[in-house]
Image (cartoon, one colour):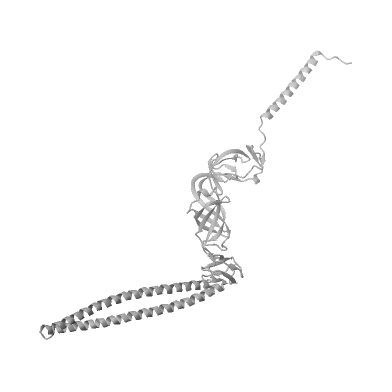
Length: 420
């Protein structure tokens, strides 16, 4: 039969239940409190998907880079100096030319007719000049002959007067007659001086009139040369040593004066036109060294011109090539240009982070010593180059940071990540 439990047994059982309940509640509370104090688990980040770089100290070469093309230093557009119709195209683009190489042959009947008329007018002007010269020289010769006659008479009268003066002093000749001889000699002497002056004046007059005739002749000769050059210019020549790059007209086309017909350049004298982003072009100055990558070799260069205008967010910079051109270098070839801005000795630097602009403050994940976790760190950047950038504050030599973009893998407010 059943034996009734004592009251002490029942009390002890209730006490044990109370203790178990208290312990259970305490355990649940402790666990809950611990969970509340725990930091959220660091999100994982695949190591293979990020770029990690080590902070270094030393010389940082600041550079900027841009895309560009090779262009000739000497480019000549050949214009039409005479209007006409393109009859023949003698060579094609890519042909090596000399100054005398004929590219086009034009035709213009009006220009050729004008040359014939100018030639006839020139011959007429030459004949008129010769005729006028003969006339003036004949007139001058007649005056010189007349002057010579007067001088001869003067000398004869002078000698007669001197001879008869001796007889007059001895009383052998009439005083009246000697006066007449003296008067005659004086008159002829005056006429002789006048004739000399007339010859001098007429000589100058002949020169003046011949100069007028010569000017008329030169005018006709200049007109003839002009007409002849227009006809010669119907044969369009290259005008320089180089390569014919472009033809702008076709056979049968009528061209006007000053219209562009062809483009010639010297392929051995090239320069690079590099486009640099306007935000990076502010530190470029003339004379800085550069390097041009043609994909088939590198060419050293020097900045020679900076375009003052900005086009599509870029600044055009001309780089003169200082070295030998590699094989395949030709006009319009796409190249990469790198310009050296300055050399910064003994600075902290790291590979340029994604979205890391010069003189800005960004957040980077710095790896722990075990390299299994990375902590978000605020870093102040300084001056930058193409691939590297200066560290002002936030990092030390030898520390490793993630420089690639992690925004697509971890939330923006993440302060710690785990590298897998």
